Amino acid sequence: MKARDDHDFNRRDFLITGTAVTAATLLPPKARAQDAVKVPASDPSLMAKVSFKVNGEARELELDRRTTLLDALREHLELTGSKKGCDQGQCGACTVMVGGRRIASCLTLAVMHEGSEITTIEGLGTPEDLHPMQAAFIKHDGFQCGYCTSGQICSAVSVLGEIKAGIPSHATSDLTKPPELTQGEIRERMSGNLCRCGAYSNIMDAIQEVAGGVK
Amino acid sequence: MKAFTYEKPRTAAEAAASAASHPGAKFVAGGTNLLDLMKLEIEAPPHLIDVNGLEFDKIEKLPSGGLRIGALVRNTDLAAHETIRRDYGVLTRALVAGATGQLRNMATTAGNLLQRTRCPYFYDSYQACNKREPGSGCGARDGYNRQHAIIGASESCIATHPSDMAVAMRLLDAEVETIRPDGSTRTIPIADFHRLPGDAPQTDTILAAGELITAVVLPPPLGGVHLYRKVRDRASFAFALISVAAVIQKDGSGRVALGGVAHRPWRVEAAEALLPKGAKAVVEVLLAGARPTPENEFKVKLVERTLRSVLAEAKQAQS
Image (tube, rainbow over the protein chains, first blue to last red):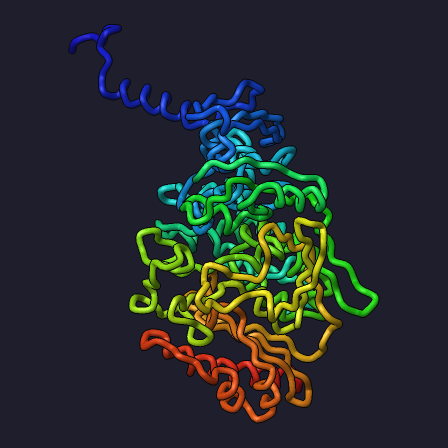
C-alpha cells in the first residue's frame, strides 16, 4: 500500500476541511465594535446617520435613508440571521425585537430607530450558548430549510412573553381574564410566521416544550 | 422607493408646521402600510415626518365617562388596555382579529384608520386603478372582485376599507381629533371620516393635506354584549370577506356595523331599530341598495347569516 504523503489530499480530507470552513463561516460573528459595512449610495444627499443598539452593542450607521431596518441589519451590520422572505410584512421571516417587542423589520426604516434597542436572532443565543427556544427547535426538528426559522424563534419567544404579559389575542375567550396558555393561543399568535416547508407541528412542539404546561 | 427627506419633530406644532412647509409630505408612525406602498412607489412622499415620540401615546379617561385614545397608541396596547377589554370589548375583538402580532405591535390607532385598500388592482402599477391613477379606469369592476364592495361603490371604484378596528370605532361612534398645519384643531365624527369613492376614489378620507390625527375619542361605555365576527378564507391573518361588529343589549336592541362590504365601515342606524326583529329584517335595511357583482354576490347572504349567528351568540351570552 502506498504510504500517505503530505501532498496526498484525499476526498476524506477535502470533506473534513470543507465542512470546517463552512461551519466557521456559518457561525455568527462574535460581537465587535468595528465599523459597519460601507454600502455605497448612488447619491450622497440620500444619506443619513443613525445610531442604535443591536444585541447589546452600540452601532452607528451611515446609510441611504430608504434603507429598511432589515436591510440595515443584514447588509450593513452583516447580521444575516434575519431573513427577507416577502419584504412586505406578510411572512414573518424578518421578525426581530425592538424595545422588547417583536416587529416586522422589513416594514420600518433604519432611520426611524435612533436610540432603539434591537435584538436579532444572533442576540438570542449562540451555538455555544443556545437560547432555550433555539435548543427546543433543534431537539424537535422545528425547521427544514431554515429560512423562516430565525423569525419563528424570535416570534415564539415574544409570543410566550405576550401571553405572560396578559396581551389578548383572537383566540382569547374571556377578555376580562388573562389569556390562558393553550395550543390555540400559541397557534393564533404564531400566525404571522409562515413556513413553506411546513414544519409547523414541530415548531409547535418546540414552543410547547419551552412554555411548559400548555393546555 | 423614491427618495425622500426625513425629519423627526419634537412637538405636534413642529410636525404641523413641517407639513405646511413640505407639500406632499406624509406622516409616518408604524409604517406598516405606508412603507409597503412606498416600496411599490404607490406612495412617494418627498418628505417623511416621523411622529413617533410625540405625546399622543396615552389612553385617558375623560370627565364625561368616555376615553381619549392617543393617535400613537399601538394596536397591541389598545387591544390589551384594561378599560377597552372590559368596557369596549368590541374594539379589542376587532383589533386582535386583524393582522399579526408583529404588525399590531407596530401599527398605531391613527395609522389603522388611514390604511389604504388592499385591492390587487390598486397594488399593481400595471393595472387600471382610479384610486392610484385617477382616470385610468377600474380593473376590479370587470376583473376579479370577489373581495370587493357590495354597497356604496361607484363606477370608478369598488374597493373596500380593510380595517377591522375602524368598524368597531364606527360602531362605537368614535370621534377623530386632528390638528392642521395652521395650528387649528377639529373633531371629525368617524361616520364622516372615511369617504365613499364617488368620482374621486383617490381620496380616502376628508382630512386636508398635512392634517395630523392626534386622538380618537370614545363616548362612555354602552354596556351589553360585544361581538366581532370576522368571516374570511383563513382562520387567521387574512382580511375579512365580511365582518359584523355588534353590541347587543339585554332587551335585544343594539348596534351593528359591517366590514369588508364597502369603502368604509358600513352602518345604518335606521336598520338597528329592527334588531329585535332579527337578522333578515335588519339586513333588508342595512344592505338596501346593495349592488354586488356576480363574483361577490354571496356576501349579501353571508352578512345575513353571520348577523343571525352573532345575534344568537349574544342571546346565549346574556342567558
